[in-house]
Amino acid sequence: MIEVPEAFARIKAANEGERGRAWATALPEVVDGLLRRWSCTPTGPVMYGQVGIVVPVLRRDRTPAVVKVSFPHPGNVHDPDAYATWDGRGAVRMFARDDDNFALLLERASQRTLAAVTDPEQALTIQGRLSRRLAVAAPPGLPRLSDQVDRWEHEILTTATDFGNPLPRRVLDAVVATLRELGPNQPDILVHGDLHDANILASDREPWLAIDPKTWVGDPAHDALNVIRSPRHTDVLRSPNMRPTILRYLDIYCDAAELDTERTRRWTQAGAVREAMWGRRHADPDWLIHATDQLAEALA
Image 1: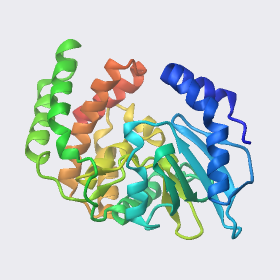
Image 2 (image 1 turned 90 degrees about the vertical axis):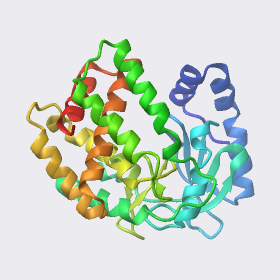
Image 3 (image 1 turned 90 degrees about the horizontal axis):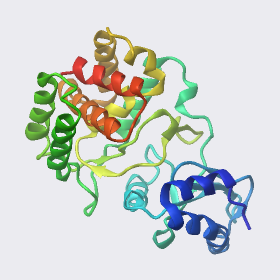
């Protein structure tokens, strides 16, 4: 049986309490059953993130793959539906799924992520082209971004009040206008939802493939926030004169993604405000809150 890394077991116990500890303890038996059912042989050490584990394997036909098992959480329910819809288009292929165990058998891509691309404009172009490739018609039954906008507005305004209105009124007015004008009527497009550098892997089949979708239906312009608010852009985001550079970055991304720049700017501004308020509630580092505030103001 596999060995669950102790560090991962500690993470799940810290984040999820007794339920997380029990889940991590049961993982070796769960994975052993999956390996037998899917006729796979482990080929390397268990990898992990905040949410789950990944086991590199070979399938019966010697195809490299990975078995991914995620902690049972509502946010992970629809990952298989996204992979099934894309069917390898811009994302790793799904070979099998076990919804009861939140488990997937996925195509194995390289461990080289987009973070290896040092030129920020080249990376933006790659992310934009991948976003366009992933922007396909969504199947029924997936969570819709349009259903979230009323809650977002309430949370933003409540948090702003609770923390002494840290952002200028024009910044809050801009996000409210975006949520009310663009929020209710969004296209039936599958949105990755977390298209940052670490979720984009190099591959032989296509140059780059996405992993770990959040899986929403709505305006693909939503993905621009995670693209812009990336660790690779930290120096720009911490600069008081970020606006010209950020607008140029948005232009590059939107051109590659074939998105309307103004609509994408508005959604990115709204997302920045939401993240800044969330960061205050959940004790993000002060520098990150300040940088996100600046981004929200620059795009208002």
